[in-house]
Amino acid sequence: MTAARVVVVCTANICRSPFAELVLRRGLHTAHVTSIEVVSAGTAALVAAQIHPLSAAELTLRGIDSASFAPRQVDRRILSESDLVLTMTRAHRGELLDREPSALRRTFTFREFATLVGHPSAAQADSFAGLVRAAYLARSSRPGAVNGEEADIADPYGGTREAFAAMAGAIERDARTITHALSLLSEPQPSALGAAAQRVGAVQPSCQKPGTLQ
Image (tube, rainbow, N blue to C red; front, top):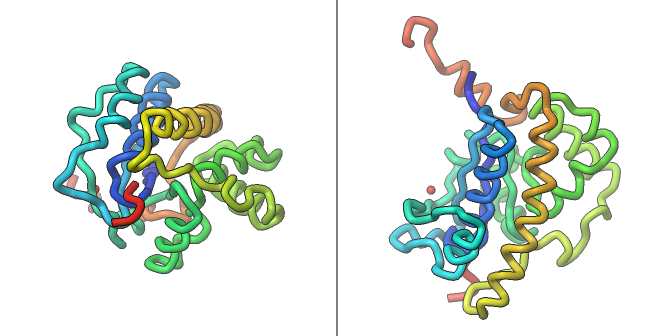
């Protein structure tokens, strides 16, 4: 079975989105969810850089190794192959939708998705596709559910260790909610809204990654 693909996006892919990726991965692994893949990318990725040392330190505090992490640039292929896109801010979400308008129904801010999966309709979802669809419908019916800065994960780049700790705590709380929702699915399979289904269809039967930065 082809895994559903979750893409977490920030700017440079060195602070927030790597932390979110690795925390989500660990949470899914702990919950024995093997049919969901999590990656991250940046809208202006520092592809030659490493994860920010203060993000790495927050991961180390949680027993997560980030030594092998490498930033990657988001592109249309990554977006088209995604089944769920989670951005760190509303600005990132808007930028990605400018690039790939067809991703609207599967693109949310990280905090927005964590809020929406608590909606009663989402609780009834029994598949990955159903959960993403329920979150989209909940957003459509409750456009004010997550407003303003509440929808964003604050940018810690250039800040203190305390700023990174606050970022880590906010992401970890939301990641816990998202992981729990995904772990309850009886069939966490790829969404028909994304391109995992296209990846399946592409397999032949006989053949058988100045301003604010993260």
